[in-house]
Structure formats: structure tokens, C-alpha cells
Length: 571
Image 1 (cartoon, rainbow, N blue to C red):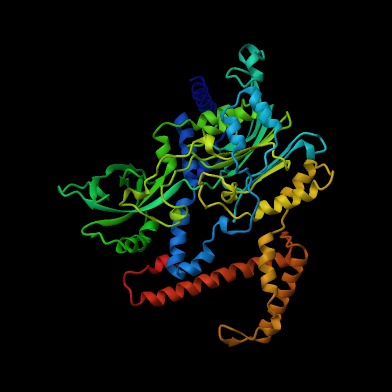
Image 2 (image 1 turned 30 degrees about the vertical axis):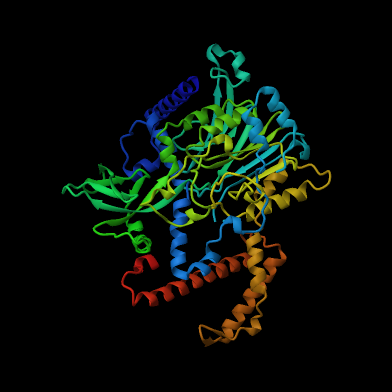
């Protein structure tokens, strides 16, 4: 497989370059001094693969949502908790990114060069931190060429997540051979953009033919299963887990962790056929949830412990062999939307992403990656921790990349991605990607601004796209402030059962005036906006107050129930 060979060569060349730079540097970056990482430990291709694997794991959120949702259900009860745990599907009808009829996917499945060309000519109808991109067709731009704006909102860190790259590769002998223009493995190419530190290639950027941007797809590719464990009956230190009424041997490995400034620590890792048993202190605090699920079952729990198991589809899929690095290698050489989609397919078994696409031939497109599990149970049953001692919740396989959402030259002339739900289940998209998407407010704001910019025969420019990237208006802020403005400061008589003082009345009146000013500005959350600061303070204190009331109520209930939550969890 020449593509795999090329990916290995790229990994090895990257490692050699990193090690050469470190060996010839006058001084290593200050992080090495701060962490005591001297001398330099040579970088290897395996290190780059480990970075990709780590990123693909930490950028999944299904399990965290399950734990948080269960906690809120236990605090407030099912009905009240629904107000806290509504998903993107419960929001207003934000427009999805990708069409729901699968037209483009079907065309690509059977594509030859002629069919792909025909498909391109046919139009297709189509919550904190987050990223966004949008791409506008050349029919709406002054240059007549597409504009792609990609803005990943990652927290600034040391070292930073991204590093900038400018790649120039010349074919052997210096000539541009025939493969250079067709994406061949030996041809020249030019690429520029950014990638994650420690990884070669480009996550976001362009070659000489096409450009691409990414946002997290937020597909639900992991589940938490509550399972039962017991020590083996032969007196050994090994474990068994219950499954369909029988006890199976768990896989147990022991590893030694090197702890800086302390003694080595041996850890025991227990795995079932679903995944690794989680046993961190944070999850141990959540054992009451597991116990509660077990208590609801009639089966005896005699001599068995209750643990939480994480089934992450990326781990399961990797067992069959995946080739994430091939994706980064092929993206550099993509010369058509079909080749771009093929390059993205290698990432589909690793991570859920939304790819935005634009090329010099004038086409714009969208590709979703993330071959999530096919769950046998009704949709939304995975929103809470799942009973793991039965086969009824076992995955029935995984979606194939060809089944995932795609879009090519949509009729509206632009595409938007902001971590929101990118398919419309109501209109027939047949495959379930989960419900852990972020809110669609940012996508709605971007779309509203794009529609305003292209209204009539207006043509947009890169400068307008930059201004849109810096847009600070907040739709949810407007919604919240409109509700608060319904209150009359003169009608507020007391706080926590005590009459309001004159200074408190004045502060409330002033705050309401600032919020009114914010609303009149269209809730433009600029850095110097006093109203925006008041909104952030009021909103955050409102949320904390509601949660605190729930905690206090739960504590009262727990005084008569020793099996309840710990104070640590409540905190």
C-alpha cells in the first residue's frame, strides 16, 4: 500500500527533523527547563501516533455528558433535569449543515470522474468554547472564487496546541512529474497551515488546489456502562465481570508508572469486552449512581463490586487497524472533492470532525468524520449510564464513512459549521450520530450574517469574512436579557427573605439599565461593554443559585439516606 508507505516516510522524516532541530538548537525552549526534561529524549514516529491517539480520545464528550446528566437527574428529578439537560435536538430549528437525503453520498459512492463532475454541477438542498468555519461559494464573492473562513477556538496554552507549517515538497530530481498535478505520491506540492504540536501534516490549511478547515463534530462515539466485577473464585487477584447471567474473565494488566519526585506506582488495568474499567477518584465519587442502577435490578449483587466501564468506539475500531496518518498525508495531495473525502475517511475511525472544503475550481463542500457505533436500543437511551451486565446494549457494528454526512456545492451557496447538529433527523437522515452536539446559536448567528451580506446581488470579500469572525453578538444573551427585562426593579421587595436596602435597590436599577442598553446594542459582547459584564455576572450567579438550591435540597434528603451522594460530589 503506497499510501501507507508514504505516511510512514512522512512520520520518519518529521521525527528526524525534530531531532535534528533539537540537537542543533543553541537552547531548548523554556518548558524543558520548567519541567526538568533534560537531556532531550529523541522524538519517534510512535510519539506522533500517540499524540493523534490522545487527541482522538480527549476530544470525545459522550461519557462526560452521561455522568453530568445522571447527576442532574438525581439532584432535581427527571422532569426538572430535562430543562438542564436538553440537547441540541430540543432547540429551535437551526439549519443543519449537511443535506438529509444522502444524494451527494450516493453519488460519491459510485463516482467515476464523469459522475463526480455531474454531481458537482447538481445543487443539493441542504453551547462555552467551540470552533466554527464557513465557506462561501464563488457565486457570492467579488473574486468569483470561494472563501473559506476557519476559526478553531482553542484555549491558549503553553506550549500552544497549534504550530504553523509551510511545506514545500519537490519531486525527485527537482522536476515536477506528471503525478504532481494529480496528487500522486511522488509529485511536488506546496502546503501551508497549522497542525497539532508533535504531528506532521496539516489539520487546517491548504495545498495548491484546495483549502480546508475543521470543527469538532461532537458525534457520540462513546458510552459508559455500569458493570459488576468480582474477584475470581480461585483466590487469585484476577477479576471477572457479569454478562448475560454468567461470569467472564476480565483482562487484567499491570503497569508501572514513573512518578516525578516520588516512588514508582503500579496500577491495575481491568478491561471487559467493551473497554477499560474506569477507577479514578472522580468516578469513584459517582459510585452511588452505579449502585442505584444495580438496586433497580432484581438480580442479586452478592460479593460483586460495581464499576463504570467506558466503551470508546475509537479503541474498538483501532483493533481492526486504522490509518489516521494516511489522512494527513493524502490531504496534502488532494486534487478533487472525491480525493479530499477519501483522505478524510482514514480519520473516520479515530475522531469526529466537520471538514469545510473549497477549491480553485470553485467548488465548496463538507465532510463529516466519525464512524460511530450502531446502537441497538432506542435513540437517546445512551444519554444516561447504561446497564452493562446484559448484551441488549451491545453495539451492532459501526457506521461506514460512506454513510456519513457530506455536502457538495449546496444550492444556498454557503456552508456553516459551529459544533452544532449537522444533520436533520426529522427530515429523514437515517443514521444516528448522537445528541451531544453543541448549541446551534453560533451557527444561527453566522448564517444570519451571511444571508445579510449576500442579500440581493451583493458580493462578499475576505475583509467582510474577517469582520464576521470577530463578531461578538450573542443570541442567547438576548434571550436571557429579554426575560430579565420583564422584571420591574420597582416590584422587587426582598432578597432571601430580607427587605432590600436602598443601596441594593439602586444597584438593581443600575444593573437593569445596563442590561437594557446591552439589548439595544443587539447584545454585542464587546470587551468594553458594561452591559455585557453585567449579563455575564447575572447569568452565572443565576445558574449557581439554581444549582445550589438543588444541592441543598438533596443534602436534606440525604440526612435520612446514608447511601446517597458524598459531600465531595455535591461540591
